[in-house]
Length: 159
Image 1 (cartoon, rainbow, N blue to C red):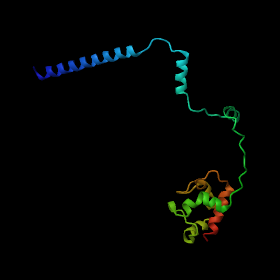
Image 2: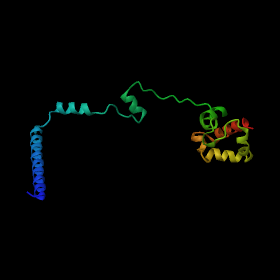
Image 3: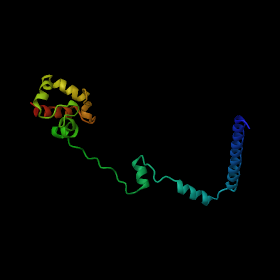
Image 4: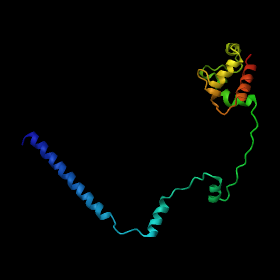
């Protein structure tokens, strides 16, 4: 037998085996399928097994309906942060370590050329971002007053 005929013969045997396997799998699948309708209790059991663990309440009324212990949230007015708190929250991570060439707090030589540009330029860089520094030091919730206070705090300690 030539090599081409052997390859064709092997291919035919392989295809035949695959067809037999497919027939066996389909016969098993047909025998596994139950044609009788599901009872209400069986359907309820299945739905109970696959139901979500919880539901998201999008309103206070929905939350109170789902759990009567949910209370009205108490709104507490936050006191404004001091300049030092703003520095510690938003600025210190870079200006205490010099990350991305940020001038370190108290480093007079590093701050001198920046202070020479004027407070308005420093404020603009702080609010809009400059080189490696993100806008508002990466704390978008800071007001202009917060940024200005933190800037004054850093400049005072770096002259």
